Length: 255
Image (cartoon, rainbow, N blue to C red; front, side, top):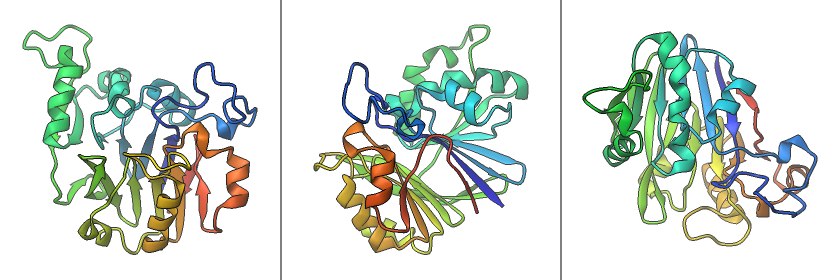
């Protein structure tokens, strides 16, 4: 069995947005509180984190309070997807080995700059240590997980989605090339970004996300990377097709 825990479902600013008084940001429904996007995948004894949001410490304490993560898959280097890597220090110290990070070459170079103190020759005591692994589009294994990288375009920036068994996680997509869409056929569950209702230059809006879901026809689809303009969770539930739901922080999916 594979267990997926959605740690965060918000956009780069999170929801609520600081100072915003809109109906979503002032909602009292816990499912309208959206931390920045990350997810945990567990299968057998293998645990992989997808992205490390700025809210990672809170997310792990709330939804995965264990000191075991084998590796981190990084979709791209934007801060809302990597800023929480430093919060993995307790896990790195407990496991007594560097954390394995899998990402595109460009993303790995960015991490060396963002977390320069972890890559200095004279390592500062207490700094987290990372072991970097370059990925392209070839499949690879981490423990019991077979991972197929998916090329996704985030405006003009090439990033990565991931298919793991019959589950796929796509975030920050504006366009998925036809050959990569083929890799996403036959899914049981798809998690995909839907930022807002209006067209956006670098993210799927709701209509684009639903069109992609319709083309791929997964058994079930969940929306993530949702901004406050998309609407409240309960309103979306009533509006969306039967096989599509807005994800929420702490959602557990078992396959």
